Length: 83
Image (cartoon, rainbow, N blue to C red):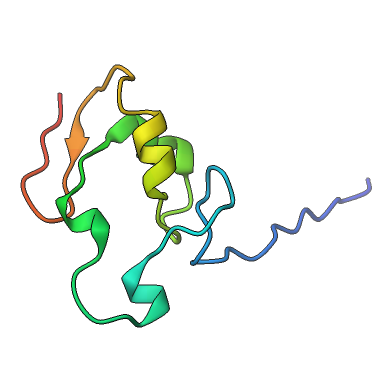
């Protein structure tokens, strides 16, 4: 029996896991002040699509998926609500 090893590419914390663009994460860039995402609302479905939990979704992808049906929401700077 032959075993195949699948190696995943390392996650770039500065790249959006959905589009690969710059996610403008303050934690990664080291810029002062709160990140833009602290006032954003993410659906659980969108977070599940991103999958890694090691890189932030960019604002552009968040806006692109804003009208999608949601099973719950996550607010980094506030309350989260699930089904």
